[in-house]
Image (cartoon, rainbow, N blue to C red; front, side, top):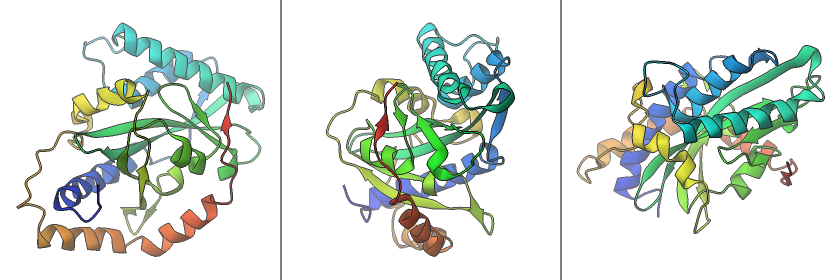
Length: 246
């Protein structure tokens, strides 16, 4: 896979639009704060991030397998924040990774939590995937994620930030040849993120569309944040990359 392929350029343009909307809807606040007594609210927010809106009219009615994933992820969130959180608070946010393999396009939801309440530094952020793997920092996720071999587009440093109204994004590549997590992240792919107007997962790509105009649009989109992205990527490389054990 190559970032300069016309099919990839077409996917990237759509993915950038989706990430912009994710930033505007999910990234408007750095943290969402929940009391540990507000478990139902926490589960509702996590469920929305992982699977979108429930298929049934009742907001609590996710499918059994989905509900089980939501419960497990929330258990990990509470476990990772309980010991050091003041006043029983949980601070979390949602991050989405746009991915393209040879045969598919999909969106990977991640939960970011603040482990130690007294220091809001990036080295204090933990990232949790839908299989309840916990990554010590964003660099750890990039190196040790369980995704299949694919190209990825993500918010720089795993945090939605904007410059001049544009979300700062970085490119990457997952080099694994197999994955144990695809079946779990698949719901976002099948939904097409239509609940948020983000049809980024299943887009028919025509080589004709990805021509000079596509490259020009991508150049404009990237140029806004290139310097900031490079600086941020340099910072993340200094962090510890070991995964945390549950």
